Length: 276
Image 1 (tube, rainbow, N blue to C red):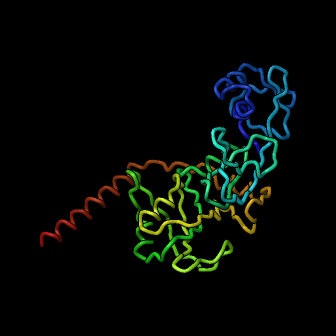
Image 2: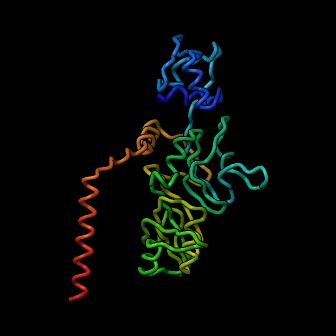
Image 3: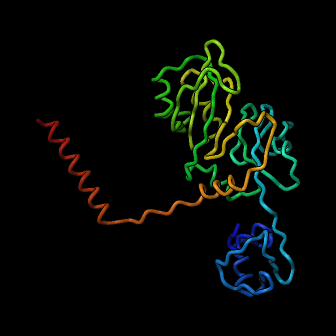
């Protein structure tokens, strides 16, 4: 994957991005034996030879794994805790981390990678990537309750809502719902800490099990708890495509004026109808 040279130097720990730009402009960086002094130059760290002051730059290759996190594992490393970490289930000697964390008692899809930028774009609410969960709740929530979860709930001063909530079948690959239990399919793009658990408890239907089955186009599939696999090149390419920054819409004064006039007209019509 081709990336900007100054970004690769920063990722390799050579210098900060700004200092890396200064190194490039000063002619101290060579790519495949040629001095590169132009900012914005893109290179492929897995195929190009990069030197700074004639010293080779070691760039760690990117790795991507899909893990079915079992209960009882935290998603990341915590030196202050005694809990087992899901990172130890994937035997890779590189410094890896989880993209999109799951709490200790939650299960399901966890992306393990050392690609920080892709992970951030995949999990940050700003990029609006869907996360899909199966939640086994106590009780049988009615339609009004599901609508309330979609409208949003104020929890400890923070607004939480799901994009879509629906009842799933009683029989799921992860188990059958017991008497007075219901499987819910919940889709959201925010992913605030313990969001689904807080929301369901707030409407009177606490969560018994919570399993993430999808992030964007990435599916958990048939992996059993504790099992993992490397992503295919096609899956990685699709994730990169999904996480490309969206172009900003250009501001159009004329369009803004038209919308404002339409808004004023609509408001006036409503006022007139009330006074009749």
